[in-house]
Image (cartoon, rainbow over all chains, first blue to last red; front, side, top):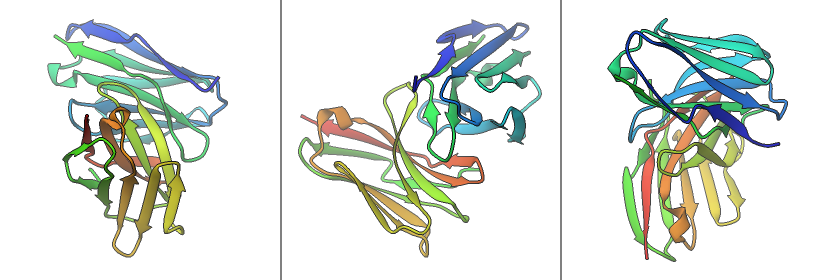
Amino acid sequence: DTEVTQTPKHLVMGMTNKKSLKCEQHMGHRAMYWYKQKAKKPPELMFVYSYEKLSINESVPSRFSPECPNSSLLNLHLHALQPEDSALYLCASSQLSEQFFGPGTRLTVL
Amino acid sequence: SQQGEEDPQALSIQEGENATMNCSYKTSINNLQWYRQNSGRGLVHLILIRSNEREKHSGRLRVTLDTSKKSSSLLITASRAADTASYFCATDLDDKIIFGKGTRLHILP
């Protein structure tokens, strides 16, 4: 299985809601990543987990909370988001340098 | 902060022509990678070139790397309609991946 899956594909939430994005890979990759991508912009790195430990946090606001329950799963918990957080959220995994991306979750914050 | 800068930002060429995109970066790297993204979807890895390599080929793709100038180029030969996408370079240093602004490539029939 060489796929990274993400759920849900689309999410609409209000600013007071709590929701979670999920990412899963079964390639045995050691590292997993969250990126945020706005329209016509490149992906921006948010978090990196290596061997299930948070190794990089790119000064992301605390309303985004990552979690890595095991080596195959990566979650991004969302709380009290702002409309400007609306974006495509991409998950990726890697063993070495090549990253395998999921299809993304399109998030809209109302 | 963004590391890579691609040029051109947008490129339209006729099917069958070659497309060249350039990328410049600012700091030390382990590797430089190129990715393709079709509209609103996940990125697909195309090719990786290590900091000690100067040129690499994969099918219709040719990548060069000049570490003295901190620049790379991606050449797609004999373009096809299916090559229409955004192309990003990405620099890689110790798990920290930084993407350039990207080139939007449009192949005209």
